[in-house]
Image 1: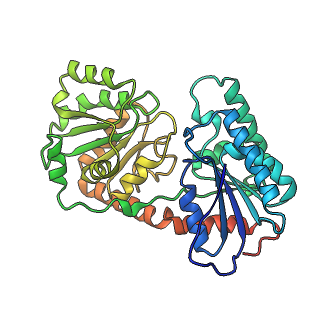
Image 2: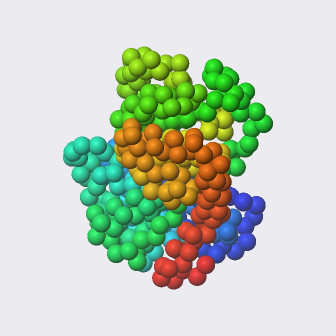
Amino acid sequence: MSKRKIQQSKPKRHKQHIAILSWKGVGDVIELAKALRKRGNGVYLYIPQGNHSITPSYKDARDFSDAIAQQIMEGHKKWTFDVIHICEWYAGYAGIELRKKYRGRLVYSSHSTEKMRIKGKMDKESEKIYRLERLVSQISDRIIAWNPIAYEKICKDFLIPKEKITLIYDGFNYKEFKDISDPGAIKMRYNIGPIDPLILFVGELNEENGPDILIKAIPGLLERHPNLRFVFVGDGDLMWPLRIYAHYYYIEYAVRFLGHREGKELHELFQASDIVIIPSRKMSTPYQILAAWSSKKPVVASYEGSFGLINDQRDGIRIDTDPNSIRYGIEKIVSDWKYGHLIAKNGFKRVKDEFSWSVVASKVEKVYKTLPDFEG
């Protein structure tokens, strides 16, 4: 296990000392730590050292949690942390242990609960994780929910009073999605005409993300709008069923299956698209909607697909998870591109005003300031 201090040039006297505990690769904890550091805080980031899976087992997390709790208890005897911030359940047992020492200064933040992440009945491991999430939520002095769905679930399932939990949207580096000079040229890479509207789906091709719902909406859309083109980015179990459906219904000419894409190519696809569609049945990640907003593109999404972020008809179109609803959402924009540009503009304003890391850090610090003895 490692302790990582987010460094700047020789710092001035820190406003507060903050320990952030997280599993490696979870969320954007490094970006949050940097933003808090820029605000004058001493930030110590504890994450696993070496190669670790993105999603640890319960035992992995327990071992990690015990190790960093011991490290913090033994390594800081001359002074104490003003805040212990536990990111997700992975460091939950460290939070339980450190709560005894740092009484009144434990913050727990979460993007989801175990019930939100799994499909079907929970197994023994999931039940352990869920019980740990509930316990950490109950003993923490403040909770940060990173999206509206998590906020609702934590309040309801763990019986948390609303005055104890704060909704703060996760940060996003919207500046990575710079305007491209020739979106038509990007489209032509994939054998799509430069003025043909490109409808973009990004995500694993599985039942949870709903690509099967989208493919069933395409024949009806093409009857009314034959120049639409649909691009599926991602791999998964539904790849071949989707291809077979496209072949059977004679829509192959209008559909592109690109497989996994990332980095610059994925960013350019967002920027060259005309509509981003997110028909998810279950919550997975807000990346698609924030990438679409950052690229100034209109979004059509289910409630789960948008993490509950969309203000319907203002910065996106809310749909149900069925083909008819998808057709409605897409046609609402296709039939009025001026309206589509308006909601795209509103989405870009939101991602710029609400999701920059400097804004997020200021809101997190406000939560810290509600803790006893926090003088920042």
